[in-house]
Length: 241
Image 1 (tube, helix red, strand yellow):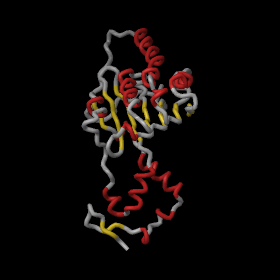
Image 2 (cartoon, one colour):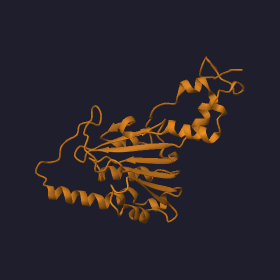
Image 3 (tube, helix red, strand yellow):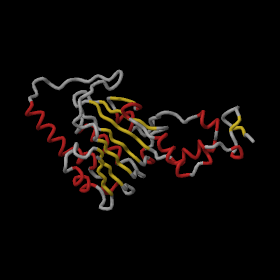
Image 4 (cartoon, one colour):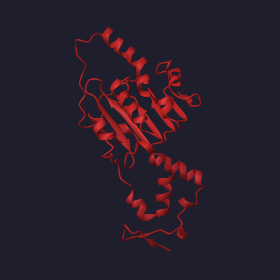
């Protein structure tokens, strides 16, 4: 038997007329919900050169993509079950040391206090971006439920691809900056990037359980130990190939 949702004029499927999907084990449904709710900043995100004004504005929280109204209309059980089960995930990516932009992706309204996972996608061209590191630190310190910090370095040392999407202009570095200067800047970034990202997080991130470093062999070898210096002793640091 069907019912009518107050926000819609069309009937919504009742539990008594359960679809095949709702008969799957809860663990499988939760896994599917997680895959559906995952976000990719590089392909799905909103880009801006003023991320603090757009993404850290408490008076006007940023709205990502809206709730799936079609799903809510078709099957209320799946809609509400998915909303309860999915991890509130935010993905970040940085663009260019020389013409800084930050891209963020989230499902629904951005709420740092309820965010459970932050995925930091570091691009080969723009790794060790200290401006982006500073923004990430401010975001981390606003979370209250963060469980997983995922730092994706899998693109490090791969061929450059400057085509990152429409309306994003990438400037070239100053031609007067020599190779030695660039090497010094990269070494400085390697040593201080995570320091900036995680400053003050050891006492603030009470629910943090895991820090994942994806791309072992591509990021600096001392990064795992550096992470441990800035988080609680019980936090697990995982390295992925």
